[in-house]
Length: 193
Image (tube, rainbow, N blue to C red):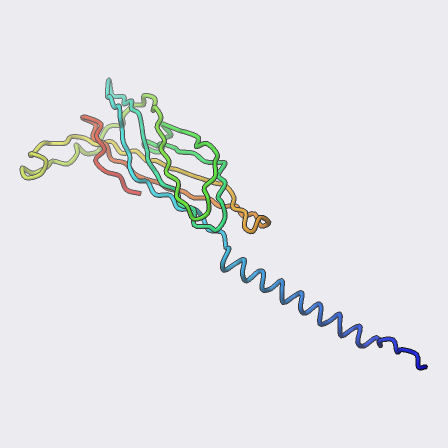
């Protein structure tokens, strides 16, 4: 009987090279799928409404309650866990209001609606540079609106998205809005984000 031949060193080397090339190919395919299909994206914030349920002006200072309604859309294929989120209110570059947004989750591909309401402590009004728009007779009964107050709201949400329960990616979203308010009665004249 003949002895079975042992594989030569060349066939072992060839097998290792083929296995290595196959593993590299699989890793490249995984990265391509990760960066095309599962690539983490930042959430989108849309401010839907701004209201001032309470507003008063006395002795050159203003005091009001600020309410902002926003929707946060998670475009990812994984849940967005937000944990470091806030809403700031600025007047003339100075912070006049602040609120932390509680931590939470937004499911994959979903939109979550959020409402934030807080009291803004009294702050002095700066001297207006203009006396406000004067309306013609055919708009709003020809009433003069008077001076306006402009505030800025900044909403920031930061968190992470875990893709395939393995890859964790930091994402954040920001929305800044300028809000015009009539000083005479506290009505919101408009906002632009």
